[in-house]
Image 1 (cartoon, rainbow, N blue to C red):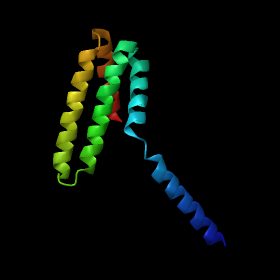
Image 2 (image 1 turned 45 degrees about the vertical axis):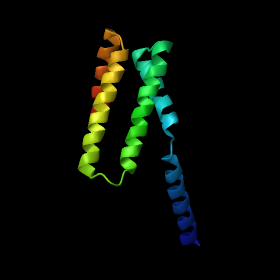
Image 3 (image 1 turned 180 degrees about the vertical axis):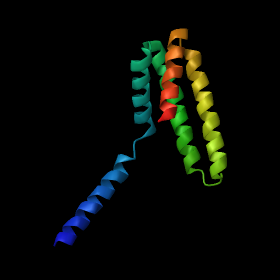
Length: 112
């Protein structure tokens, strides 16, 4: 009986983890935009383009991870290039003060 209970709990835990990882790109982009809005004090005019840039980056990342034709090394290189392009697009939208804050935030995120 104890083994059956533990098996059931393990199965429930595994299913929960599977569903917890299935966050759609739009939700993730909204969360990231909200975080950037809070950290950088983005204006409403900046929020929409930031959301679009973040969403495009997330979608590209998912597409690259799903692409079975590329080697792991090629995927890493494309992800790195995509990330740099996203950073440049975001910095172009920001004021000088926000750009300094963004670069500090990005460095902090890269350490994690």
